[in-house]
Length: 179
Ligand code: S3P
Image 1 (cartoon, rainbow, N blue to C red):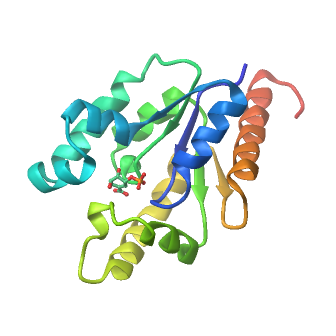
Image 2 (cartoon, rainbow, N blue to C red; image 1 turned 45 degrees about the vertical axis):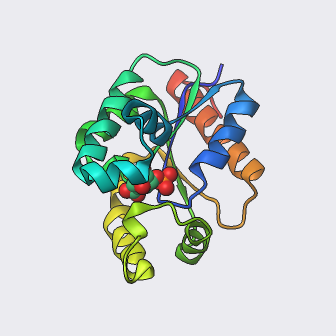
């Protein structure tokens, strides 16, 4: 059986869509930290940011992650900023292989621009905020991930299959099989 799979990456990288596809291919349950946080707070992510601020959102995000410590058979999609805390990065690694879903910055920006739901991009210059955050975070994703999948020119299906293949390769190497 495939292990749990954790998806990290910037806003717009396709974590939820690709994650749902992986879950259905692998027979796993799809879990999304943003959904867990919203449920726990009884508020949308935007409302949490507006009424309690980012720090409160980050605390809820860490709490949601710790609740998943013993989960089995899941594909976990995470909010783009979850990797900022070292304790979160350690918790993610304990859950399962960590895949960094990435794409060209223009592709990411085009995807996030379709839906105005990201509190961190509700600024006077969303592209500048986007570029600054991405520059800050790329190294953190690289450090937190076991492997990187570029979704720029891939369908959700292709990206999902690529993640599964990498996770299986990791699992086989860990068991000492050739892959
Ligand atoms: C955030 C990304 C969002 C959400 C929140 C903060 C971030 O999730 O967790 O708005 O800090 O990058 P997505 O990556 O699913 O958009």
